[in-house]
Every structure is written in structure tokens, then in C-alpha cells.
Amino acid sequence: MLAIKFRRQGKKHQASFRLIVTEKRSKLGGRFIDDLGWLDPKSKKFEVKKEKAERWLKVGARPTPSVHNFLVRAGISRAAKIPVHKRPKKTEEVAVPAETVKQETAPVAEAAAAAPTEAMPTGRQAPAENSGEASK
Image (cartoon, rainbow, N blue to C red; front, side, top):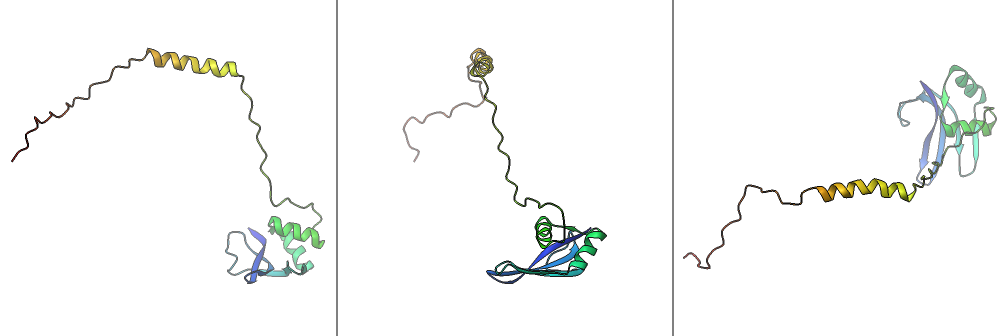
């Protein structure tokens, strides 16, 4: 399956990106099939080869969410933007009435009271105490 991805280039803190077509599972530092353009996020400049990008999209190459949003902004794709960072929905805990909690714990407390509290013999005997004489 083909994918359109950003490939990072540049020095530390001076990133620039190439827009490439590659196999979805391949490494970004490896070989790629086609180069579609570049992006410089600091200066917010970019260049996209529109004909090539449209051809690869028609062939079936799928863009990553970040690339999809970039192509929408560049005017190549007419779809809506994809939210890249989804926030997890907070799950509200259902408040359990106190009566049901008391009813659930009551049988456990009764069972614990009915259980024998006598210690089980282990089969071992305690060592005999010395009479205080040290062996010489």
C-alpha cells in the first residue's frame, strides 16, 4: 500500500520536510518512489507538484493525516481537515447508591465472621531453647 508522507530533513531546530510517496511500512530514511514537493514550517513556505500529487491520489496512495491537512491547505484535496490530535473523551463514573454498596459488603463481612479463626498447624515444631550453657 502506498502512502504520501513527510520526510524530515535539515539540522537540529531547523527542520524542513520533503513530501514523498513510499510504501506505508517502509522507513522514512530509506528509498522512496516519488518526490512531490517540500515544506519549510519556520518560514511557512511550501511547494507542491500539483499534477503529481493528484495522480498519486488517483492511483490510490493514501496521505497521512498531517499530509492530508497540508494538501487541503494547498488546495489539492477538497476534503475536510482531519483532527490530528484527538483528545480522549472523559468517561463519567456512574454514582452507585450507598445502599447497594452496604448490601454488597454485608455478606462478605458475615462470611468472614463465620470462618474459623483457629491457626492451622504447619507440622513444624519450634526449636528448643538452650538452657543457657554455652558449648565449649
